[in-house]
Image 1 (cartoon, one colour):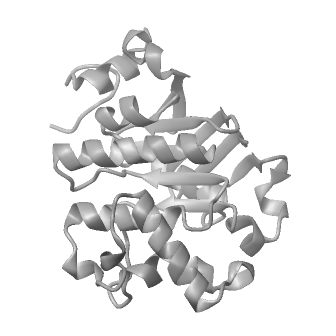
Image 2 (cartoon, one colour; image 1 turned 180 degrees about the vertical axis):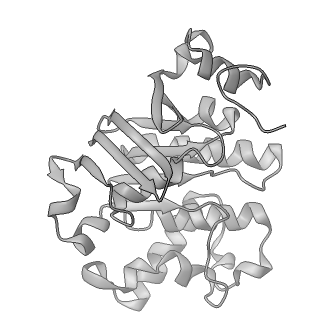
Length: 248
């Protein structure tokens, strides 16, 4: 479904993506792990066309990202942003229906609200939440609303950017379970970027380790703890000494 071939991206002298080669199969849930500043978010932005690679090719469902109508292309995606990124000035249902009221997917107001309430129920929230504003909700509820927005248009591909950031362990577990259920239920292709190994074990089918601008290892989640890869071993066990250099 998503094919990265020889992707390179630099910002001045900062070589963020050095030579990325990675395949994400249709209906697969892929987690990209790595430390902060290793280029995980940049990788997602190259797929969405928000950042153009310096070289290389990205193919989504057989189509070159750089050779497609951008607005129509983006309609295939859903996104759960780090921190939620809800619009403070809009009630919950309008946040969820944001894309349903714009572009080629535009729906009548009543229908958009009805879909929003349906998606709220899917993430475990009742219709009484629909007219509240984000500031009136807890962090966990805001994250659920963000997840409802990500699936509002029934996308083919969903990106999850650090989905459990800022949540306590119990709510993190709830969100991870919801994400896994929704990915399987909708049959979507999912790409999650995270440094939370609990999320990885709950969400992913496949895992790729990104460090120093390259995919250092890629394999099944079940093989993660026995990968035999020094980068992966250091990262998942939180070991200070190893090939991943830390600032002292």
